[in-house]
Image (tube, rainbow, N blue to C red; front, side, top):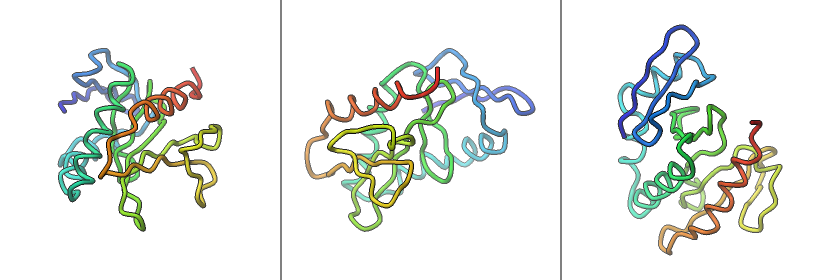
Amino acid sequence: MNYRRYGHGKKIYIESHINPVPVPMPFSAKQYIHSMTGNAMDDYFLNQEEPAKSCLLALRSIILQQHVSVTAIWSYGMPTYCFKGKRFCYLWVHKKLKQPYIGIIDGNKMEHPALLQESRSRMKILLIDPEKDLPVKTINAILKKAISLLPQ
């Protein structure tokens, strides 16, 4: 994915091929400089082992297709997705189960049978079995709900 960064000081704007309209991002310039240099996000996806790698790439695509205002950033050492500058989910691989998952940032405000709380207080996760077909309808429903919970 090609991103274009511009701005100065604490106001950083990022633009992607999916989102041609610049979206102001409320994060520090340091986070963006780190996120877009060295291709940390691309390296994250490319360094995963199959079948998790293909699954994560498909999940990234599904997330970015939710809305034109969804952008990807590298935050807290993981690919994180924002809607109009507000974080709503991230991608990671479960350490014990070795399965990819979508972490919903404000998952504690959502009720869905597929979401797991585990020992997290704020976030819930949607575990994805990379050996099976993606539950696209479930993923879309959860992502739409997560976006709707963001302050507008």
